[in-house]
Length: 266
Image (cartoon, rainbow, N blue to C red; front, side, top):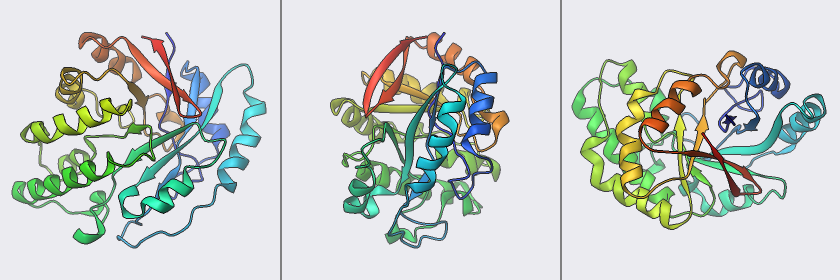
């Protein structure tokens, strides 16, 4: 079975910890065929301040050093996790124009700047009503994001639920079915898809309803991502994730080269 991790972070991310070579070593140990480095490029910082520049040089250097070490053992792709692209579409387009870039995750980590711009993980959730209000705003930003052409796959749709669960509120996205149907249908019409993000092996079953809805909308294009920031988490949760995908009737995962998907049987 061909497995590829299309969501990982190195020291080139603010919350990364090790060089790409260490993440790649773990990918080989986990039996992966491919690893795509998707370090962070968020156009709002943790506190909602706008970010105006991005430097590709450290990522280029990580790949230059790691690729010879793993030649013939692991395919290493250049990716990016682009957050809050709606805040500055012109800058987002400029950043993803890098000629060697293979893949871009379109992410939402923050509320919009109009709503204060704070990172969703920095909010202390104190009531279900507060959670619902944040989820409504999250859907607003997702609807804005899918209208932009600067990414290949929509990242971690269930992202806010991580932090709401951390604070004791177990919610689902089912109340937002109609909005998600429109979002998924828009992605599918554009030839794009979604990521099944295992959150380092923590989030598998939480995806069932979302994946069922995506499939019901006609979606087939999926990438697998661990969201690994430490080597032991590369590929974490992939085998139960694949079992769930098969159970739901998905037969392939995608990898990317220069923004073009290639499909691999599960």
